[in-house]
Length: 331
Length: 278
Image (tube, rainbow over all chains, first blue to last red; front, side, top):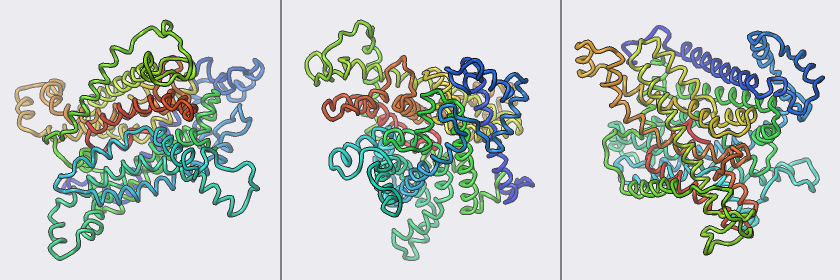
């Protein structure tokens, strides 16, 4: 939509409200999906909530407690109400509230994902700055980056383990803590950081290739703009032109696209946590899914969706801060 | 984000008309060779002769045997079949839904456009692989369910690309002429707009295909794959536990999936969709 046809709700308040409303809608869709899947489970929702080996008495109890004999519409509203209050149900495997389990595991997943995201973004943008090629003479670089990004995450992680853990012996193969070491203190944190190095690298390599691919294309696009010629004409070095002018203008869409990758990083951490035996949310989701602990999986999935949607929303708003045109023309 | 910026980000800011780089032909050749394997990889699993376990690659077993004495070449071929089936299924489904939504949004009334594209935004923001884990938990690992989840989760990319293209076609003379001649919106969409809009839609198919393969392998790798089929992810996970004394058990499935996904990505030759892969 061009600037001559701005709707009345254009501008910052409209943009923020709109993004928040969209985010809420997305979380609602995820929550509803969770409800539908639990309802559709073979054997019915009571079996889904209690597991296949529950006694008949237990089944009746949970049917009454959760009102599973009531109309679906009412159950649905109650499910949404419980989620809104942060009640994600009870894991029958761990006999503990799902919300507690998630809170226990979340720090590990964050300690894996955030460094990977920062590392991948920084390295990817640096690569993109160097490799951006407005005259399109080095197209093979894009091919190589796309190829790297298409390698499955487990293969990257396994190669890293083979080289740096099994081969060189620099890092441990698996695990977050050394069971034999006395716990606590700075030494413990350093130990964890050391043990997280390979998982973070494994997660970051693919995302780095992706960010580099995007950054390279976006920066090359900017480098073809007339204002770049002006910057060069006033005597700026190539590096300064790329960093200060091209990157600054390429940044808003990059921020959006990197933020949209968050969902993929969540998916990637499932594989990485499983491979490296890290006690995070991804591994909990997988082990719960294998044990048919559906309340736990459903809880993690709803929370993961909510977090991904939240990140997407924040990222859209950050992009609008970086590029005022987005807020001005947002419709 | 604005549609134009999105398209540029996905296509690398390049138009549709450009010369294919030379390595594309090589990548295409590798793909065709792998697709041809589909036809030779049959064979009744119950009739497969059991050999000694951990046989290194050699005569009779070109890729060696695994821990259960199964011929690894056959296992990898069966894994490739699964990968290809998932890739084709997800790509077809996502293209079908995405093209339909993109056309309807671009040619329909503004309200329908708004609703459909916001629905696309919502679907695109949900992590499909995570939802696939829940589906696997509820129904058990199932290739059909996985294709449905990934296909119905990844059409928004196609819909957005088609929508952008349709938006630029809508005001063109040939569309106005068709309308002046009394063509229905349905006919305009099908006959006049769809052929043009197919190019951007198909440009996303490499991304969809590769992403589906990687997702399937990732789920199988963590143990949530379809237990009734062989998957490269599951072979790679199993092979890795024997990597010290039977490295071929790990190298063969990893090489196979890399040989499939990397050429696909290089053929696509554009940044992959932000919401496409694990």
